[in-house]
Each structure stands twice: as structure tokens, then as C-alpha cells.
Image (cartoon, rainbow, N blue to C red; front, side, top):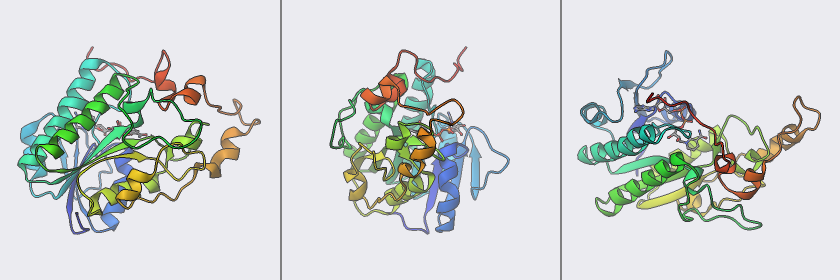
Length: 277
Ligand SMILES: NC(=O)c1ccc[n+]([C@@H]2O[C@H](COP(=O)([O-])OP(=O)(O)OC[C@H]3O[C@@H](n4cnc5c(N)ncnc54)[C@H](O)[C@@H]3O)[C@@H](O)[C@H]2O)c1
């Protein structure tokens, strides 16, 4: 359990998800150590380390004296295998190992719904938080590896590990799939705060999703650590499904209707451009 006097390292601190968290955690009293390969002009963490998460010496310095790590740094879309291997898998192993060596007992890992993307959308009921790994892309495989590394560091080293299978984190839902899978910025903050404050340590796999009327992902894992989402994508349903909007309503694709991973299961999943060329 990490109380609000804690010092929290956030990797990927310049990214969009970190932007949901840093201000709120600081308002709650946490001191934030930002770690990212780039430094934005408006970086607002108390301390900032511009380094790669694959640079273990730099991580050792950045993590010194921290009480917990929120590990967000990574490539968030499909791309070349070598890039995902280096950043998402090697990088996560480096973060976990350097956290262990620094004596940090609690790490929150950004996994993704795409680690289980080929699980079918249920006709009724909810998909368990720890449903089988069934990745939809190399990206999804990298997130499955993130979860496996988290499991290793819990069962071998006794660290408290929270693997968050984040569904769709956006400012607001923009298509029909998001009416089920949206995680609002405010609920993201609630979820990560619950991971820091719960006395229920151990190894957890938890869906990161808001209290959407059309949600098909279990809330049990979140409730077990005191995460109770409040936002509901249904508030945006009329706008998302409005037949008169420019371009027409943004309806679910055949992939969205069949699989948790939606369009990541299509022949052309959303991609980042290769950085290794
Ligand atoms: N946003 C979502 O809906 C969503 C959904 C599922 C999972 N996730 C996961 O959450 C995490 C954060 O997502 P995001 O949307 O903020 O992505 P983002 O791309 O906005 O942020 C990622 C950050 O990581 C940094 N980074 C990348 N490689 C690095 C390296 N080698 N060393 C140091 N920093 C590095 C980038 O500079 C960037 O600031 C990612 O791991 C992503 O896979 C996000």
C-alpha cells in the first residue's frame, strides 16, 4: 500500500495516459518522478529523467527512493516485431528488474485489451479479468509478455503487480465499440490510484474500463482493489450514433462485433510506422 506521501515513478510520463494521471496524483499529495525518452515543454513532474527504459543505469538513478512504479512507456500500436521486442518486452523487464533492485515492492503495468484481442465478445455476461491470453497482433503479444513478466516478478520475488488490461482510453468515446470499451480519463486516475492505495497486494489482472452500460468486461478484478468507475460512455451514445453527423454514425465493424480486439483483429490493424528502418 502506497499512501499519498509516496514518491511514484511514472515511465512514459510524456504520453497521453500519463497526462490523465500526473496532475491528479500530485493533487492527492504524491510526488512524481517522470521518466520518458522525451521531455515535453509542459513537463510537470517534480523530477524528470529523460532516458530510455532500456537504459538500466539511468533507471537505477531515476528509481532511487521511489515507493512504487507506474510503467506506461511503450509502443501503443502494432509495428515491427523488433521495435516491440526492444521497447515493450526488454523495456518492461528492465523496469521490473531495476525496481526490484531498488527495493520497490509495487509496480503497475499498462497491459492492454489486445493481449486477449481474439477472445470473442460475449452474447451476454462479462469476460473475466484473467481470461486466457489470446493476442491479436505483435503488439498484443508484447502486452501478454508484459503480463508474464509481471507474474514472474510477483511469484519469484514477491512484488505486488497490477496488470491493467486497458480497453480504450480516450477523452470521449468516438465510435460504437467505445460505447462498450471506453475508459474515461477520470476513471483511469481512479484505477491507478486504487492500484497504489489498495492493501490487497499480490498479482492482479484487471480490466481498465469505465462503468459503461454496454460494457462486456468484468468489474470484479477492479472491485477487489477498490476501483469503482463512475463514467458511462452511454452519455455520448446519441452523438456517436447520430445518423446526421458529418461522415455518418461511427458504427462497429464486423471485427468490433466479434472480438474484444476489434479492428486490431482485421487484416490491417492500426499501425505505427516502423522506427527501425
Ligand atoms: N491509451 C490507450 O487507450 C491504451 C490502451 C491500452 C494500453 N495502453 C498502454 O498504455 C501505455 C501508455 O499509452 P499512451 O496512450 O499514453 O501512449 P503514448 O504513446 O501517448 O505514450 C507512451 C510514452 O512512452 C514513451 N516511450 C516510448 N518508448 C520509450 C522508451 N524506450 N523509453 C522511455 N520512454 C518511452 C513515449 O515517448 C511516450 O511519451 C502504453 O504502454 C500503451 O500500450 C494504452
